[in-house]
Image 1 (tube, one colour):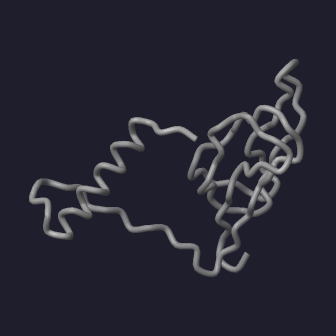
Image 2 (tube, one colour):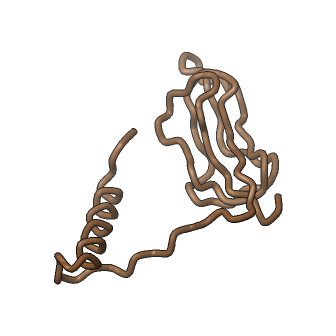
Image 3 (cartoon, rainbow, N blue to C red):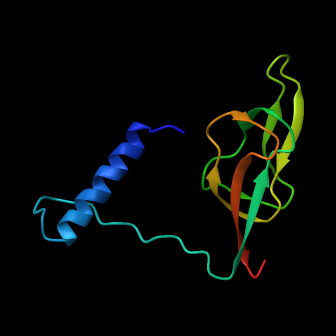
Length: 117
């Protein structure tokens, strides 16, 4: 839902790397990172069970355990905690919601579980 300066720079570097690979750019580029794969791993989807304002307590690419708190959904009028959002699997958070307004059923996070989970 938003584009940050760092995301814009990553996109630009990616485009330059592709252009160099295609032979249409001769300038300097970064070494592209290897993509993360999820072979044989469980993906834990975390959805909101209530509407409110989501405040994360974990970082993107942070490690979490089963039942560990990812964040909270607050009542926007009085700040009370409506829901504590927890991880369904042990693993790495590879998607974390940045836009704070959530509705019932909104995707909050995706967690890449360990082998065979």
